[in-house]
Length: 89
Image 1: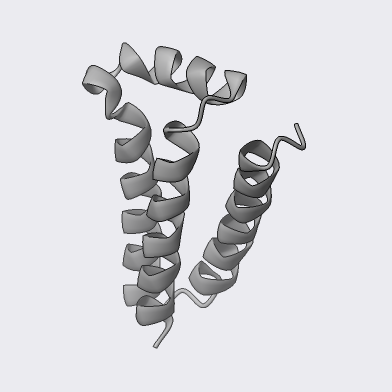
Image 2 (image 1 turned 180 degrees about the vertical axis):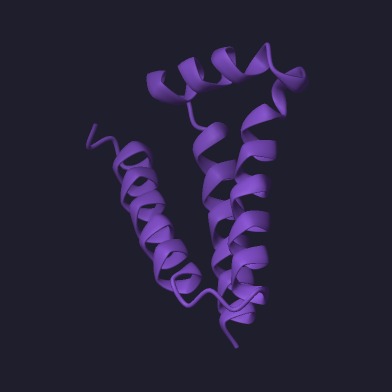
């Protein structure tokens, strides 16, 4: 069950990441420029994938902290994405 919840949060993180990276916000433009040098612009997606893969791996190995840690990460991503996409920052 924790792996399924982590996977669903990962889907939400990727959707939010894509929406944020496609925004015209100055922070999004700066992130695109910074990660553009790393892996041809897909570096930030690779980083997001590695975080998801790590959380899934830890959950599969039985670490009970994996789900709460990834939920906190998803919540922080959600707040940051909301702030960027609504222009609060």
